[in-house]
Length: 95
Image (cartoon, one colour):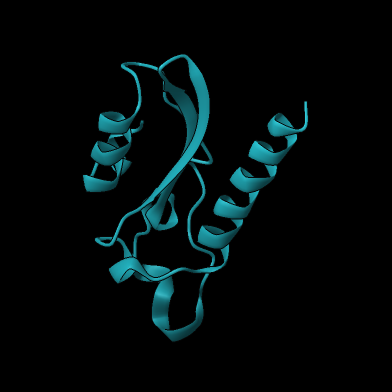
């Protein structure tokens, strides 16, 4: 996990998964909102950390929302990261 997104959300993920098994997806994604003077606001990972890892030798897909980023609001890119993760999990489940 990048230092920019190390937060309570990141801590929840690392405490859930087996040690050193987490692979973050979409860490470079940020909010695209420009309305309401939002361009000046920083939104690391757009307020959600997504990825996959292992729990007891089983592959799992996880996300954790960070309420400290934009007060926990769900924006366009935030939602897209979660739905992309669902898509990846479904593809894996159908194998």
